[in-house]
Length: 394
Image (cartoon, rainbow, N blue to C red; front, side, top):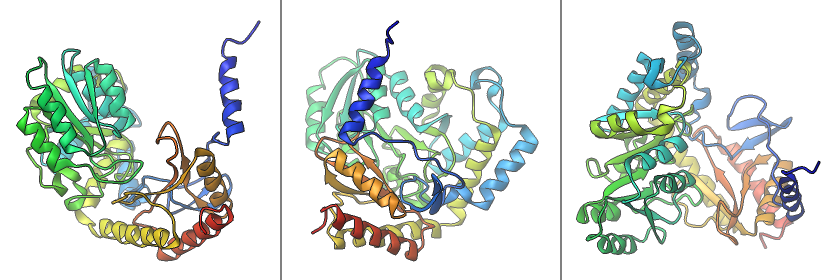
């Protein structure tokens, strides 16, 4: 009998021949500035652990205490019997932190984006979306079956032109952008887009996954960074990156959150967070308020490492944040660079098409608040050595 899935094997073989096949690297211990992967100690420039909270003592202690008090699981989805007091406490804490009326926590940032867009729109509605928005936004747009209009990256005039053309069209309009774009590390054009949304009565939605804990006062994100409180109706964030734990959330009006409680499918059909996860997230927001020096250290390290890369001659694109790509062109070259870096003690992941456009493959780096200057210097030396070896640097 022939294997009906044999085409998958053929595709995997093709990726191997092209040099774009990626094997999962196994983390054998804590996610930290230096970590053990596949039995090798490496400087970790591949995590989203911006503030080093994955190993913070307060988060560890909160998680352990929650297990002792509440057990290891909730036993159900939120709408049946899985809403625990600690879940409500977390939602209230996030809403207060983000200066919003209310908040709903999802199982992941992906679920928060996709579930929200799909829930609040219908096939009669319109979505105006930045061409480089995250995959979770794209999937949510498709699931909503609304009419999708894509504008060139950060082109406010183009977005407003689309909105103007839709003024007479039936249906609602949603204007959506990342706060920080995950592949290039640049900041979204929020002030101009918010103005365009207001002018044309569109709903404004921002995915702040990579700016939560990074931008704004105490890491409140791009809405706070640009002082746009009250002008963005849907704020999405993550608990899986700078917060150091797991999950996503949506902040907005009480009506928005109550509606998502009733209609967001990932919320309705997924078991709620284990108590330990919710407790660790709560502790993380305490750390954001009490230890602002972590964000200062993150930005100090970012400026130091970014300058080291550009001084060496690497192309870091348009990055404005700790996400700093090293753009090399073809996907095979990016994956080769990643493998050579790992062999020399630095973990930085190669990324190619379809995650980024063809010809713009890169190794993406993210420094953290807990990297030392000595670690960053070693990483820069490895980048220079491998860059010269592969002909990326002259």
